[in-house]
Structure formats: C-alpha cells, structure tokens
Amino acid sequence: MGYTYVMSDIHGMAHLLRAMLEKIGFSGEDRLYILGDMIDRGPDPAGVMDLVAAHENITALRGNHEDTFAQWYESTPPEERTGYFYNTWDVLQNDPVKRERIPEYVSWMKRLPLYKKVKMDGSCYLMAHASTEEIMRMWKRKDNFLWDTSFIERGTGVPAYISIVGHVPTFILRGYPDEPATIWRSLNGRIIDVDCGAAFPSRGGRLGCLCLETGEEFYQMEA
Image (tube, rainbow, N blue to C red; front, side, top):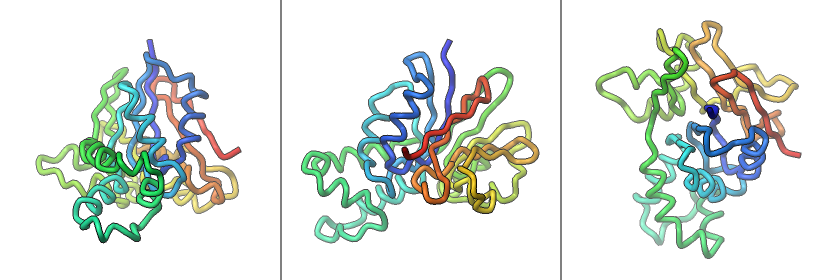
C-alpha cells in the first residue's frame, strides 16, 4: 500500500521537487497532491510542470500564480507580452524549446482543478490553494480558492473537516523566526498550511511535504 503526500508553492524550484521525491521514496503506489503555485519566482517553472504532468499519480491544483499567468497570456496581444509580473514568461521565452510549448503550458494550467476532497482513514480532507470554504458552498467563487488569506488568519477552518492549504508561507504565520520554516497547524487542528516558502531561502524557506497516513513531515532546502 502506498502513501499520500501533500505539498504546495514549489514556485519553479524543480531541483527541490526532484530531491523531495527522492527523499520520500515516491513510487507508483503513492499519491501526491500539489496545491498550486508551481511557477514564478524560482529558476525552472517548466521543470516543475513537466515533472508533475508526467506522473499520473500526482494531482496538481491551480494556484493564483497559474491562474494569473494563464489569464495574462490569453488577454495580452502577442506583441505586448513583455514585462510580466514574475519571471515565468522570460524563462520560457528565452528557451527555444520551451517557447514553442508556452500555449501547451497555458492550456495545462487552465485545466488544473481548484480543489480536491479526499476521504481516508476516517478523515475527510479538503484541499485548495488558499481557502477551502468555497468547497462547501453551492456557488463557488474562484478567487476565494486562490487568494483568500483570511481563511488562515481566522484559523477556524471547516467543521468536521481537515483543510490543507498553501499560499501563505508559514514563516509569515510564525512572525519570521530564525529557524527554518515548518508546516503550520491551527490550534483547533482543522487547518494545515504546507507552504514552507521554498522560493525564499533567505527567510528560512524550504519545500515542505506532509504524509497524511503517518503525519510525518519532510523538508528539502537549498544545499
């Protein structure tokens, strides 16, 4: 029987993702959920997307960075596609092979789901990039899944569920401590934030990964 893992906000740090998969011994029997923000900031957004897309047992959700990039690309005339907010456009555009695949990457980002419900071992997990509250509502608003920081700030979560999110680096929640970032849990245990700020090593950020079956936490930081 395999294990179920969750991580978020890899932000172009493909080398950390590869190292993490090796560290946890990720195999075809396991399942990994990545809660969005795979692009921007780090040096290799394509490497993250290619690795994720190549694994049927990796489920990626959409983050605000994928959503924003796809919207920008499709709403901006080709001759005006300069000066994107983050580095993903320049990184892809400066590589002849990746440049040809930009429409493919954008199409992939647009197909990413906003949320996931996972029932396992008597627990029901709600997963989204920033907030899971919309999962329980009839009329679901996309922006809340992707941007709602108040969900973490309130710390109440969704009764009877365990919500797992990213979006807000945990070193921010802990007031920028000196020690490396770790996975954060709300006092009532209903919210888990697995965004440990992989793209911010100067802040103690690193890639975090949680195993749902065992509760074990794994971390991978810059060498």
